[in-house]
Image (cartoon, rainbow, N blue to C red; front, side):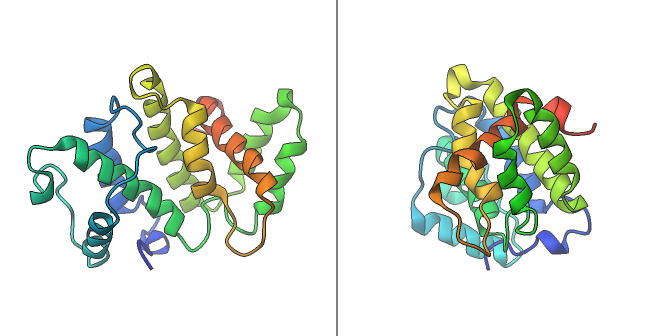
Length: 195
């Protein structure tokens, strides 16, 4: 399975996630539509294979990206989304999905506090990884006037990748709730996550 490394990180962020975020923070925060554009499937598959073999990808000097940081950024953004989609279960865990779904019943005034309480229930490694990716997404959203990736757009892209349960059928009608959860994580980052 692609990127089957979350449980082997020993409490740290998977190296590929650190690498992708670092590259994207340096090169893609102002790239229009970052995370909304797709990439060549063959190129992504080749990168996945190399990463799964333990190779570190040098996005700045990889031959395919010679003098093309835009393509490198596009591939890095697709790989980051793919990482989360490829985990055996979502960062929010299958076990906690009923509590996540119940957040849709919480009033708007109490939503941020409820989201904060929910993330405290996550296993430590999941919490740390979720906090790391959401912190990065806040930086992307801060550049939305240029990259057009508002917190809402980012929640639509990342909500399902971070929250969709893998052990049960979920009505598509829940998608809005999952995206809203991700949106609250981004816009309320400072109050949701402990610093």
